[in-house]
Image 1 (cartoon, rainbow, N blue to C red):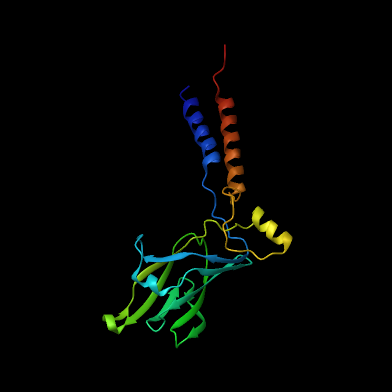
Image 2: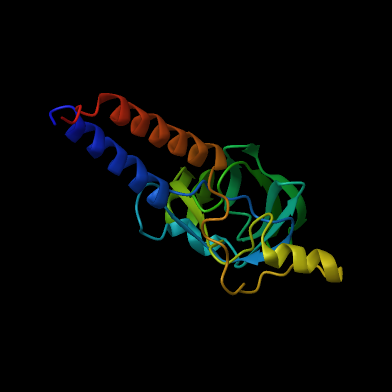
Length: 203
């Protein structure tokens, strides 16, 4: 009995892990979407002062699982530079008369996580020169279809372009690691075999 109890406890933990394991972050399905976002102060939930320079929504393009964000900056005469983890942003177009700049940049990894933004802002009228706020762009991608989802397959079947509208009942656990499940089931089987071998002999 001293051996059996910890083994049974381990098996119970393994079985619970199989049912409640956290799903692996899913890749957004290929397509073009309008995505709402907010620029926040780094590491907080507070809206950054620089948020007012960014027009919403942004445009997200996913092609062959590569994600690009395109957005407009107003007051571009004040925003001197902008870069993200993938590097400096690409300037798509610029209206110097109206101070509007359209930029594009690649986002690697999970877009549901904040994207760090390094920028330099110069506003002489407010005595802000070479102001470099630490900010993060937080994109709302919670309702976008995931790669391999039913919504993506239906879009491919009818040949229509994916849109940024809400998708009903997006899959939540279909992208969990199958290998992890197989490993856990194998571990359970080994533990059961050990219990069988170590069971006390009956008289």
